[in-house]
Length: 267
Image (cartoon, rainbow, N blue to C red):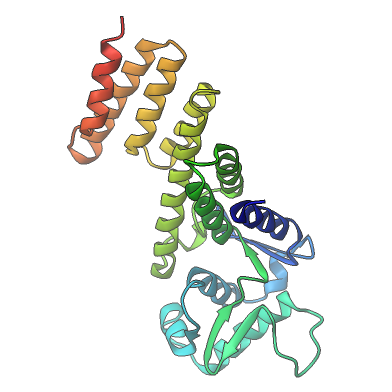
């Protein structure tokens, strides 16, 4: 069994069995032991904000308390932080014994971080699935396909949509969008010969996120030709041309124009 296949299976098992699972895409939800946490259990919104911040910056080193608070709240004090952190730990570990250290949110002095080996987070898993898909794209289409499908299956929409105006969410929002756009196109490319209609559908999913994503138009053009629908392939190019002009005042890339010429030359 290859190392990447083992990584895929380990991640799938973690997704299925993790005690704490968190959804950040399309909305924020948390499951503890397969039970969805009711919003009332969180108490204050600052508790949710603090957890979401730790998730947003999960891949950095332990985050200093003062930096966290400066990002989150204009006016804050130690009590705000302690109450919010206590609220998180109470939700994650309601039965933790007194005077024992939390296991999901760990502390190093006055710095804190979320333990990614113990908490399943949709955005983190998507990234890991896509890395596996990218690494096997040219060598193992079956494994690559499964990895991309798993990533797409976790995507439910924009990252923390209720925090769209918070600057501490923007980096993760942009990153997750780029990752899923790439996954849609990569999977569409894998499937273009065996299932061109599915490739068209996947490309359309990408365009529903970003209607200027030129790779998606090229995939659709190629898939329509596989289906023998030359007029629709040309129509897709024309749509791409119009959208790019309207949005950015530019024309399609040379490779897109070259594809059009190849399509037009088909008798």
